[in-house]
Length: 201
Length: 201
DNA sequence: GTCTATATGTTGATAGAC
DNA sequence: GTCTATCAACATATAGAC
Image (cartoon, rainbow over all chains, first blue to last red; front, side):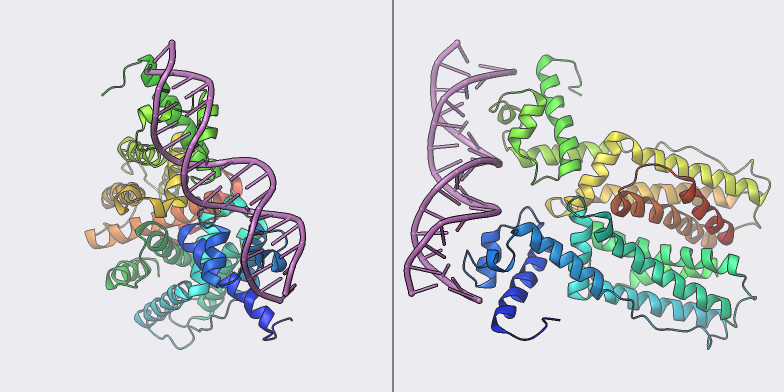
């Protein structure tokens, strides 16, 4: 809806895009409406035509977009993994997919905003992150139960194991993005993850 | 050094304590020097006597204190864990210790500031978090190698396993503190961790 | 819808008396 | 060391012409 390419909508989208970028890189409070208007190339007053409630309405809109856009699109199977090594390899490529998703500019910015401006958001607005991770856990658990490689796995074991695997992924992602400020997928990261997967499978 | 109870030092400490609390709860940018001065009960100008470079010097001082105070004081052993169940129990109590450490007011505030104001800090200032976690990994790995319960564990296995265990802990702590905004240790959290430990041991 | 001009309050920081 | 008074800059938001 209202996704049409109207000139006015383009202004609205421009403001949202610039804001998302600046909120993610400089922080919400440190980003002034003047900076947004200037970078978006729009006049001072116009912002309040599209967002009558001002700056905070922009933030809410961004995070809400983040929620609805982030439907899980990951697709994979373990059915063709006949050796433990192949299974490990498959999980590594799943990690790379997840990492890549977090690098996609809009996702990255929504992630950073969600973490850094948590106190300005509702529990619901921040919850999308947990939902995304849980979704991945669910998918991995489902596949684990049908993986030909491992000894037949009970429902009661697949779920915790899937959680552990996602914890391994999540730790690396959070450490790199939030602490080390690094967005490059390095061999060092993969060399760290591989033995961890190996030890739990 | 300079920990003496001089009147002036008390003023300095008061400003730092109030600032740490406010930076953690409201964010650095959203906290004004006026709020700090008022809450600390000190006059407008006095802040610049103790911190000539202003607001940012306070932030730097807080984070630097966070680094040097956070020497790892965790002590434990697996030598008396004769069954897998006892080992699991021991790891659960280690988790509770870590959780408790993150709840200690000063640690909690330093943690929140480090995450939320990451862009205002140097890599070095943010690095203490990784160091603390790595320290725990090291301790657990050392103990795993001498645990009577498990089949004798090679150096090459203990390290990844210890990393996995800490990943499990870290995921829960980050999810609760950063996303769910929860500081209470619930049974739900423990019930989630236990089967995960069980599946990797 | 888009613009310019401006109101109103707040910010971090300084000067200088005591 | 501690205070009061104040500055210049900047913030968000609004009014109103086009």
